[in-house]
Figure 1 (cartoon, rainbow, N blue to C red):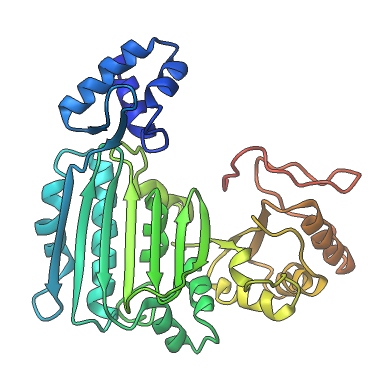
Figure 2 (figure 1 turned 60 degrees about the vertical axis):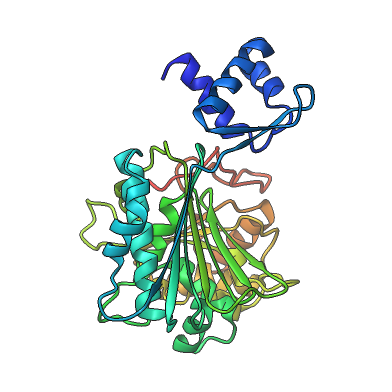
Length: 369
């Protein structure tokens, strides 16, 4: 990429955060004059990538909408996900790199298939939007809602428990025709993957899962949106290999659990029932990464149920803790030592517990070896 292309790409990727001072921050970032930056801004406007607003002194910029296509499809005989992909989405992605196009194909076909087979909706809407910085895909239906359907199918007490189960992977109401792996893998291919249904919004971004409650609730059904940078280097294969490595003959063997999804508002993770809810169905996997991001402390019963009781009953399943605070680590070590086992598993890039009880601390972003 040339210096000119590098600067223009940086402008495009940062203008949303700096609409009014993009010239200043770009000049500072590249150590060039503002006049040089303004030439690039002018070129980007001429290319149709940016839209200027205001006069010269107070001018701001925003990303231009390059594509905005929406189509409604009735659900019935003859409707299938690959035809929707070919006719509604692919024509707007012919110029993007093959790896990005493949990820978009995975996303659309997986979510459209879910709408056709599971939503109980009479129709769905599929859409694509594009700017120079992002490709956005949406699938909306007006059916029973994904979280409500999972709650009903699995006899869960709360729709939030359905979010937790969905985040683990291998969850389906139709084992004869689906593996339950599609949404898990798809959510990790995109820069942002979100599902909104009833009052719940579940999102995966930057290797983290988020759950928000929305008030008032949106319209009935399920709204899925997926976003990826048009020049992303991510590939579908590397996502599959992260959780189902090609050297592993057991297929989808790893999962990533976010402990905070087992909490309700105002709750701490203290009880054995919370731990059992978090661990439900993890016996389908051989490795579990338990992420304590956003969890300040845990109770003895919660820790004991996971790191002593479950570990003893499932010796072939390895649970790795990541992003654990010093208080969380102390409680884990406490229950392990009470059980006669003081060893603590750490992922590569994490330091062992120090003598003063601090740690483990991630060294940057932790990866599964």
